[in-house]
Image 1 (cartoon, rainbow, N blue to C red):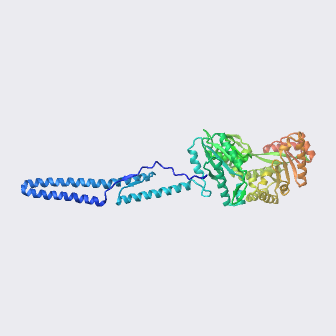
Image 2: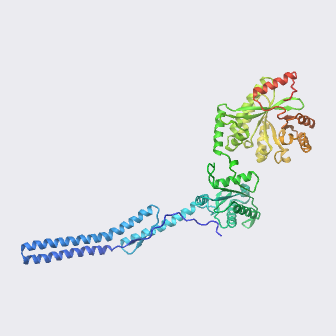
Image 3: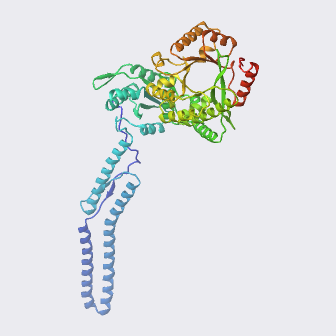
Length: 561
């Protein structure tokens, strides 16, 4: 079954053939000549009769003959005019109809000049029709695979109010293309489209992206669509043969209908494509479009614009969470955490605006601002008599940015103490070689490196030993239940021993009880961070807290919380 039927152009109803019946030009001339001859004969006869009847009768007869001749000449002219101009008018009407997009042709009943002109007109219409069909096909098809394209699918959706769109995304598209080559990738998509056409009962399969195919299903309920998706995923377990070689593919499927009233996204194609990404993020083989999870991207973009404006007008702040040194029994470090209170929305969660900054490419500006503020505040802490190591979170998006690394190194030269960047293990593993190159450069520039949220991802020991980090932060998920779970205690203790064996100090996050802090100290943990040690506070409050701790201990703070 052909998965890519050739669509035809949408045209107005074609007119029937316009009938052109015309006398030949020679016939028109003969008619005029005959009319003149008749008038001349009448004039001669009248003259002869007039001579025999007398002068008065001659004039009368001459007048009558003239009138008859003029009448015959007029009638002949009208007849000739009608037989010539009427076909030309009809031909002109056909041209005007063609100009409006209507497809007409004229019926030819003679071989004279008008007939030949009509034949030429019909030939031109035929050429235009073929050319329009070719252009329409090109406009509605992907030139690489030959499959219908997104515009074709949009036309199908526009004709069907209750349409359901299924989008099939190919996982690891770039990896597969790099392994088999571009031409083989195109052949794979073409074969996958044919397979999908069969499973869907002959639906037209469109290529709507580099790694995505789509189809529209009309008059199908949710169960029927889900059954088709299940059969597709089952069929995808069989390799696709391309150039005689089997290729295993992993598919991700999204299903969506048209958006209802008030929907942020109305297009069923866009909704189904988003559903693919939602399924991929949730590690599911397929999923329906989730309106709530999609949120309001327009509002998000507006929020980022407002955040950039807030940065330039110094309307964003930084809170500092203390880090407790379990051996020195005092605060020796702080982590800089960005805070933003929107004038209308109130406190905006950092996970929201930082995640949006990463997606929109503004994370570098955000991080550079935070680093500058943290270095300035570290100097104020030093002036107040508190030497602390300042930690700043570094997005994984910046671990391949060479120019940012240089900017950070230059800024660190003006710091009043140690500057440390915290990176998550998952961010570092996204592009290991680039991350290691940047990390080595930062360390060579005098910046310490901390591995944040250790244990929350798929930790790689082989990769861990290559990172020149001097601190490892255990994720709070293992620390918060430390005094209740022996398994968590075992994992934390083994992680502390592992980090020490690799020459790193250990900071435990999520310390919220005195018992947890005591257990961590007994396990040999170096630093503790959490609400029991101290919540994130503005710089002035932090200085006041450190001053109070120092006063209680006579210059050597030992109090916690």
